[in-house]
Structure formats: structure tokens, C-alpha cells
Image 1 (spheres, rainbow, N blue to C red):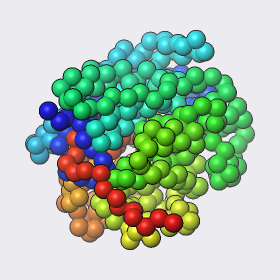
Image 2 (image 1 turned 180 degrees about the horizontal axis):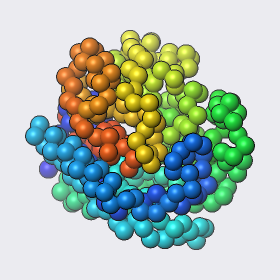
Image 3 (image 1 turned 90 degrees about the vertical axis):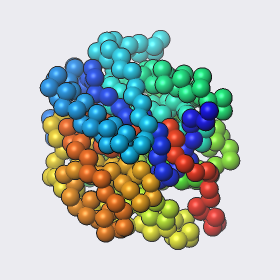
Length: 368
Ligand code: DAV
């Protein structure tokens, strides 16, 4: 039986993995996380298991999302949480805890009949793939065509990170300059990527080069998916370029919403314009700040889950984003989800595709 098939972000969704908040921890500091946590964040200096009541509330909303999808006939699977509050180590390093298994989008990339475990780029997330192994094993057993792959596990020694990247003493202006110069917290020591930096659009893969994915990681993906075309994207307005899915969100063939404060540079827009794609500014978020103890920005408003080219799940309080997508001709399904944000993101982050109808198409035939 065919179980795994997904070539893009919009074809009709039939089977999906939705994350869980159980046992989620705020990991102790590590080389990659200081620059990830904004200076004024309430998370500075905090680590340990997240409070039980916040875990319960997040799980309620994650279950709510799962139920909404199930009611629409979409099959939903869930990962198996570990005890994340335990020390992990490799021969090169150790860290006091892991992170969690709320955002499957970060860890597993589904392309066609393949599910690929990303290298990840934080030490605390090194073993996160284990939460998905029971599912991947099952798909492998049941679908004779399913390809199960794992990218080379990274060493993540000090050499994989820039040492001058601490927040202390670096102003916002300096940080923006560094991002513009493409000086990110991760170095080019070894291939690194998080799956949530990759947008799948048929034959073309668009990959953000930033804190969590380096050029070697993108190059590894290009060599791995030989018949695809990989394009590197940069969003110089983003001081913390981590994952593409609150920055640049395809809605259906021909239409992308782009975070207005993280514009794609003109030269990188060319391929979209040359193929009659429209890039519109995303609506403003409805909130001025993220919920407490949240890694992500208010732009989770645009981290929507497209379930077919006419239907999209949007966080229920994100009224401006809903209104915009409604005007763009989409049916909007409101999903209460803000309590899950602190656990690693919104509706796109919280899911990863197993099956979408459709095949690999060429949406960008004009390329110079
Ligand atoms: O805008 O904070 C969040 C992306 C989560 N996967 C942001 C990026």
C-alpha cells in the first residue's frame, strides 16, 4: 500500500503527523541558542522542563488541530515523546536536556516517497528523530516504495558555530549587518539543515540559508535529490533567520505570502516573476508580542497549514491573516493554537506531511 507521497506544500492533504507537547524542555544554553533567543526575551537564562499546565494547554490545542483534520478525513499520526529531561552526549559534547517533539516540520522532510531525517543544528535536538522512528518504521514496513533516509549526523563541535555570535555587546544594527553579510551562527564546517528551512514546490526546492541551515547543508540536499533544482533564499531583514515558514509561505501554485519586514531580495524574486508567480506582503500579525516563553516571533501568524489549494488552517486569533487569505480566495479554517506556540511554532511547524495527492510537477519552467 502506498503511504508516503508529498511533493509540495499545497496539494490535498490526506495523512499528516501532528506534534506533541509532552515532556518538552527549555534546553540549557549551547553555542547555537544564545543568538536564537532575543535579548529582551523572557527565556534568557531559563532552562528545565516546561510547567505542566502549559504542557496540558498546548496538548489540548494540538489534539484540537488533530481532531479538526480528522473530521475532514485526514489521517493523523503522532510522535512518541521521550524523556527529554535527561542528559545526552556524543564523543564530542554533552548537554543537560533535549527539547521536545512538538514541531515535526523541523525534523522530517517528506519529498515524494521519501522521508528524510534532517541533520538538525542544535545539540539539544540531535536525538529528536527518535520520536518519529516508530512511525517511520511502520511506514517502511507497510509501504514497499517508502524510502527512509537519514542525513549525516553532524559533529556539532565548537567548529560548527561562530564564537563571536553572543548577544551581549552586539546591537540590533550590527546583527542585521552580520545577517546581510551572511555571517550566521552556524559555520560551513559540515552540512547542517533543519527540515523547516526547505520549501517544496514540485521540481524546485527553495532553501533558506541562515542560522539553522548552511550552504553545505543545501548542497547536500541538492546532491541527494538529484533531479530537483535547489535555490538558496536569503531574507536580510530577519535578525534571527531560523526556518523559512514564518517568512515565506506558498499558498497555492502561483501565490506566496512574504513577511513584510523580511523581504526576499529583488534578484531572488526573479524566478518567481519569470514564472508568473505573485509574491504579496503577508498581513500584519494580530499580536504585538509572542506568548510567554516562546522562541518564535509574532510572525507565526503566517505559519499556516494549507490543506488543499482552496483551504487553509490559520490560528484563530490571527484575524488579519485570516481576512487576507479569505480575500485571496481561500476557505479559512480557524484553529485555536496560541498555547502551542511556545513549544516550537504554529500550524505549519506542528505538522509534517505523510501524504498529499498529486505528483512532482514543474511550476518554474522558465529559468535562466
Ligand atoms: O519568526 O520566529 C519561527 C519559525 C518556527 N519554525 C520566527 C520564525
